[in-house]
Amino acid sequence: MNRYTFTQAVDADGAVREKIGADVRFIAGGTNLIDLMKYNVERPDRVVDITKLPMRDIAEAPHGGLRLGALVTNAVCAYDTRIAERYPLLREAILSGASPQLRNAATTGGNLLQRTRCYYFYDVDTPCNKRQPGSGCPAIGGLNRIHAILGTSEHCIATNPSDMNVAMAALGATVNVRGTSGERAIPILDFHRLPDDKPEVDTNLRGDELITSVDLPDEAFATHYTYLKLRDRASYAFALVSVAAALRMEGGTIAEARIALGGVAHKPWRRPEVEALLKGAKPGLQTFSKVADALLEGSRPQSQNAYKIQLAHRAIIRALTQAADGTPQSVADKAIL
Amino acid sequence: MTVTASDHTHAIPIDLHINNQPTRLEVEPWTSLLDALREQLHLTGTKKGCDHGQCGACTVLIDGTRINSCLALAVMQDGKAITTIEGLGTVETLHPMQAAFIEHDAFQCGYCTPGQICSAVGMIKEGHARTADEIRELMSGNLCRCGAYSNILAAIEQVMGANISSEKVAA
Image (cartoon, rainbow over all chains, first blue to last red; front, side, top):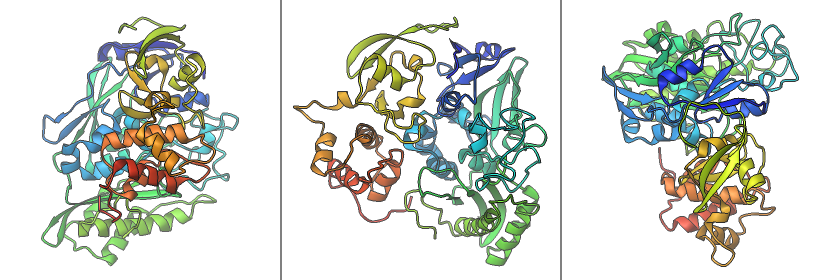
């Protein structure tokens, strides 16, 4: 690890001021940042400990729903009874990710900022446009079995590795941040970005901003939901493809649908105009298949990951079926029904 | 360490309660909890496997919660209670989980064992494992390259008692 200056922030404004003008990283759970520092991918001049800030509560949000403090750990969030009852989709997504030890340390804010697991990003002996802008992308034409099929650019084909983010995208969460010029609320779909010609920038968070909380909207999709995660190992592995599906059913008809895909793009992949196709529809294989076609429209395989297109297509259909039936995928029981 | 906004580039004094012993040590800001335990305090029961949070060999309990000590900065643990394998039992009086691991032959080379045992103790305290499938899932952060998983499961089941259902329960 590189040598850095360590500071403990005493309040949010102080933390934000610390962030100005230098290569500064906030640290909370540290499960991703410390790992990246050990690989010399991250070499900050300054590390600011934000764990003393009062951002550990889960409370009713001002306009309905729940507000998760940025320092709420993934484990505390997933096992909170309010989350379990009202946002089981978020709970299941979080519990499908990482390991219990990591979830005990990792925080809500940190998970939002989790960086890609692209092999080349982690290996400082290789070029990587995300790590070293302009150096090239060896994943294109290289080892790219785990990489993106949607929203890629000629500069980067990395994926966002988070499960939590996929569920939050489906739920339509809002990320509350504070910077030197005040507070703002960023809709989750605008929080992460596609690589375009700036793959070094993962999110639209500004340099001086601190994530303070995440608001989950009142509409929770607590009955018809699933988080279906497909991966190389049945536990403790990143998604090759994941699907967060949430439906609001009226009688036997779909009144509202949300579908977010993980493991396929630089950000959780949602297409609200495609979800609208399900409004008023009855659940069924043909309907779900058409939706899967539309969601994956424009997908572009790399040399080793064409399998993801068919895998994602089948996963979307299966997830929508599970959601419609009210039979969510179990994290512990690995059988996919 | 008091909560201040002052800068630290050199060793910082911290107070820990390690295995119920008040312990003061000075750590550099980039020292992991794992390295502080092993290199400074010579508590070598906690193992360094991957050093990247992938294997679980370095699992310890912080204020009773299991974490990967390789991905925790020592400087951030000021005032915390740390329990390592050395704090769970003694040679004369084994912790029930240690005794169960021996009884069920739940290790071969033993390198992952301190992490497995700390993790299992933490898992039981969390209280979310009710079935064998759930124990497997909630112990998935601890790898055993010898493949003693079935015996590790048996040892944990024994400590948890009869409240384990072998049936699969929906989440």
